[in-house]
Image (cartoon, rainbow, N blue to C red; front, side, top):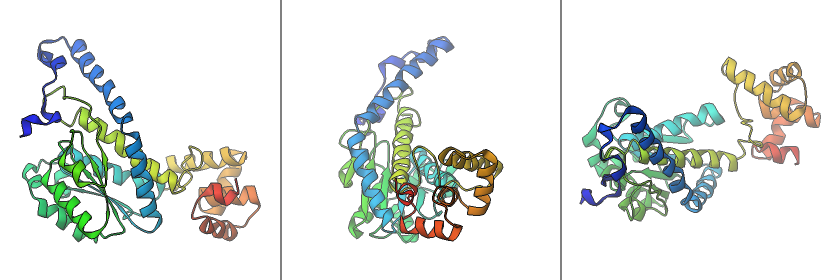
Length: 295
């Protein structure tokens, strides 16, 4: 029964929240939010397993898919859409699917989540196969759309990860790797866009960022695969080059123009390579700047 779900429980700390002065109301919300990070911390071993398993799939040419409905689906689409501008990944490498399609990103399509066959179909329509990885996202842990997609993924031998915020959920049971932060009852009973949504966002941040670090898209804590597609990113790229190479900002600007990318520019400066040689070295290192530099 739905009333037995953790995400549907009533929070005693907020039972009279509508009668509180605004500042006290916000303190109740803030105090509850501080518990979310601790809930995610308890799941770090499972998140680490997921990061390594996803990275292995992507390194072999596979893709990562997020599948969810409502808030869970929107968070998955958001995380996927941030990967190309942050890490310069191909658009197809990380994909987010939401019940009801793109229309559901801005409008509620509540009944779409009740169709397990649509979850299967949406994955099949994207050519989802055994070499890919699926993260099924459902705060309640029982969304039919998500479960349908996860069962399909298991049938064809793909990697399945279940992200939910309910104890012993169906999503967790359907997954090879279960990630189950339990942030506790929502401030507004059943409003999983709040604490469960925050926990979900924190986990997705770790998954995508951790995977990209493992794949070599990061050097130190610098986004060395950033592409100069606007003024802000161009400036960031120059500053990254200057920081790694010790060169001046103007010299970094010249290097980036000649090298065509941050990583090639760094190799050209530090190893005295031509652009062609730098790009070949990066290819041999599978794009990992630290490996290409020999450090």
